[in-house]
Amino acid sequence: MASTLNFLLIFFTALFITSESSVVRSPFRPNSLVLPVHKDSATGLHVANIRKRTPQVSVPFLVDLNGNFLWVVCDQNYLSSTYKAPFCHSTQCSRAGDHYCHKCHSAAQPGCHNNTCAVMTINPLTRRYTVGELAQDVVSIQSIQGSNTARIATIPNFLFACAPSSLLQGPFPKSVQGVAGLGHAPVALPLQLASHFGFPPQFALCLASSNNTSGSILFGNVPFKLATGSDISQSMAYTPLSIGPLAEYYILVKSIKINNKTVPFNTSLLSSTRGFGGTMISTTTPYTVLEHSIFTTFARFFVEQFVGVPQVESVPPFGLCFNSHILPPTRVGGYPNIDFVMQNRNVSWTILGVDSLVNARPNVSCLAFVDGGLNTRAPIVIGAYQLEDHYLHFDLSNSKVGFSSSRLSHPVNCANFNFTSALTPEEDTMKD
Ligand SMILES: *[C@@H]1O[C@H](CO)[C@@H](O)[C@H](O)[C@H]1NC(C)=O
Ligand SMILES: *[C@@H]1O[C@H](CO)[C@@H](O)[C@H](O)[C@H]1NC(C)=O
Ligand SMILES: *[C@@H]1O[C@H](CO)[C@@H](O)[C@H](O)[C@H]1NC(C)=O
Ligand SMILES: *[C@@H]1O[C@H](CO)[C@@H](O)[C@H](O)[C@H]1NC(C)=O
Ligand SMILES: *[C@@H]1O[C@H](CO)[C@@H](O)[C@H](O)[C@H]1NC(C)=O
Ligand SMILES: *[C@@H]1O[C@H](CO)[C@@H](O)[C@H](O)[C@H]1NC(C)=O
Ligand SMILES: *[C@@H]1O[C@H](CO)[C@@H](O)[C@H](O)[C@H]1NC(C)=O
Ligand SMILES: *[C@@H]1O[C@H](CO)[C@@H](O)[C@H](O)[C@H]1NC(C)=O
Image (cartoon, rainbow, N blue to C red; front, side, top):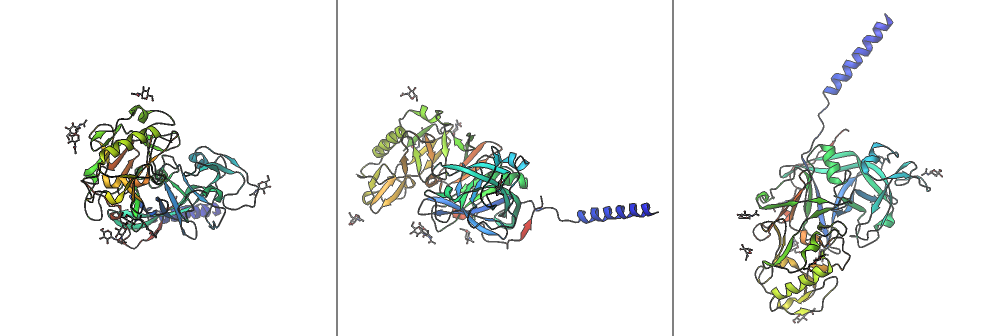
């Protein structure tokens, strides 16, 4: 009798739990997410604020297109009741890639525990690296529905690395606390968010050219409609994307044209395999860097095409500067256009003439390209200045990257991807 009662009790308990769980709301599955980014005018680099921890704080991160995870300084002011450091040999550690078991001889605190995983954290500006602790904490990101903002999406156990504050030495934007990596690695933002929410492994980058407007990084099913209503999907050109050994992105630029004339340098350099080869896209390089021999030919050719504008002594880091008093007055025309030609001559990334120059000093405008010397990371590294106000769509499942090819016929103003209006964000947690 007693055992029958017990059985019934268990039966009803089970029934109760089952019916209880069947009324639980289905988890929130955002289609796309947006991170607002802003330009730091002192460094020309871009910063994203990410909401993390418990209680929640907004933490500024340097945007690093080629970083293989998110790392943050933990040895100062890291207060969070939800910080966890996965144990060595755990599934989280194996997802993060190369690591070893960590021992820490100071007092236990975020970034310092025994028997956790040590991963290599890299400063993308100085290439210095140091050991950091793999960690997990809450991260919240704005979701979007079409052109409107929707609920805040929360990842309770977002994987990142904790680095010592000494790693933040270098020309970082002020107040930055870490680096947000967008590289092709399982725990970098694009793939970690896609695998958590089940949306496609895609993201888009639209960096604003001015510090008084906001740009964005979009994840998932990225939108192609600007706030102005115009659809840029028709003006996108696509080129194959390759992934380097450090999860970084490369495209193949086959030649460079200025005013539709091919710049006569040895193009075998562009596909050479020093390092990895190909053209790198980088958000941690303020201006496009060319290998020394390419730069020399490129600068000489540019001068030939820029008739009647006197050169002045150059202002570092630039190698070619002009008296801006004598610059042609019109927005277009008079300035040589630059094309990075990809897989065929129909696919090229056009840098409008006026966008190829930067005001370096009063009365001095410089070609916004830098001579990288003989040991550049790649023969061409396309930098942040040349990425601004272009819409870049990284389609990781199809290994291709799309870009809004010409700002002349299809101007993009990244400030028009503003998702800060619309609905009041509602807090929602997706249960793991
Ligand atoms: C790690 O273990 C060592 C002993 O092996 C101990 O001295 C140290 O305090 C521990 N560190 C932490 C953060 O618990
Ligand atoms: C924005 O940039 C301008 C110069 O480009 C600078 O004078 C100004 O201080 C910057 N504002 C902020 C908030 O950084
Ligand atoms: C933002 O800066 C740009 C140039 O840097 C300027 O043309 C524009 O008027 C500024 N807008 C506001 C709202 O300050
Ligand atoms: C550039 O050259 C191509 C052929 O190589 C030609 O079809 C095109 O019209 C030219 N564009 C300009 C602006 O001269
Ligand atoms: C171009 O460079 C490659 C090696 O980088 C060399 O083998 C080749 O001879 C060069 N071609 C010319 C025309 O200089
Ligand atoms: C380039 O575009 C022209 C006209 O749009 C087209 O006829 C030609 O086939 C294209 N070439 C390639 C290699 O795609
Ligand atoms: C810029 O050039 C103008 C005209 O040549 C001159 O009057 C002015 O002083 C120059 N400004 C600076 C900062 O050199
Ligand atoms: C977003 O951009 C549109 C078009 O540029 C503008 O009308 C709107 O006011 C902007 N909204 C916000 C919140 O900045």
